[in-house]
Image (cartoon, rainbow, N blue to C red; front, side):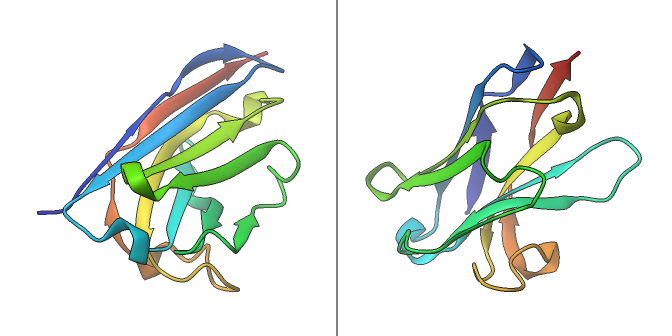
Length: 125
């Protein structure tokens, strides 16, 4: 049984930082593209970033480029998202996803097979 669990969310002031973590079990983690998505109230789920199965390729949404960094630790079956320079518009539920392809269509949520329950990030102004 595959389980994907996010952690690290919280309340932070604008300009602050958070580091999200995601642990995946029940799958061969090293063989999966991993990604972060987010969904704010009343908005569609959007891709934040992805990292290829071998860590070579990464993609970022334009809105987070230069502020967020995705990484993975295959030995621990763990995915990370370092978020710096947070803005109120980054407020959302953040989800970890496994599957898909970290290439041109990486932000299509339909391509991902496994999802976590999400961790809430709230940025105050």
